[in-house]
Image (tube, rainbow, N blue to C red; front, top):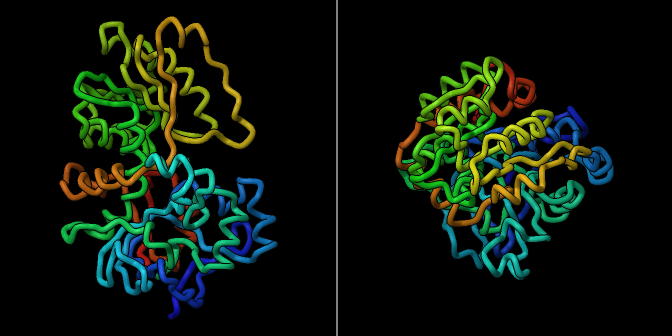
Length: 368
């Protein structure tokens, strides 16, 4: 079986070529992928922002990135029971051991041996080795061979475009549920990239009393309003901490989500600590930039105000199932977030456009 795939040969050197799909093992499936999305994780690997990327590419050869996608199962191994040929599925990209304490307790996202489809988790070299030895690559391709645990069935009513958002939405569902957002909560979301906007949706889905968003971009603030945000704060025009306190009678937000990584993360985390209510929660959604792990917080602020300071990574089956439920319910217009699509043949253009201008989550048509 042949496939077209975007092969990353070196930093910023990705080429769409025809290659062979690896044989299907007894516990594996092959998915004919239809739609995909780009993620900042892919951009970091494309640009070799992580220090282990360039060396691994030289050692093992090209790899296939991408971990957000949906398609149709076209082949199953002899021992596969979770799905069958013809099933419509989204990719669950984490391959975990299943035997460690975390996996046994249902926290597969914390598995120390976890490795991600499309080099999305684990060491980049380990992901490369997985591709070379087992043919498990990434989603920027027409076909994907993966273990059956990597497939989540989609209802027939759900489009492939919507299905390609399962992975990022499930991550956000985990974030919002871990913070236990509910009807008593005034929620603040700092940063309105695609994941910040998905936090608005998930918080509203959980019945939050109010959701306030903070960003510099008026267009993104408007999209947040269309997705259900109750209040918007342009942090370039006003002090978000003062505004948040004013909106909550001086109390602050019960739950504050710092969504972006990158240079803004430390600044936003400091703001979050200042705007969170006593007994509230500050949750970090993204990892910090390489070399920026250190951050100073007030121990006494956490202690005397009983602040919960936490974060989340990945998701579990329950989060994915809830994400599918949300997508299928039509509770939000996903095209406000997945707002641009290019063919696989133009993937380099898609990478260049990611995060620029009005572009939020950029999709890929893998059949074009």
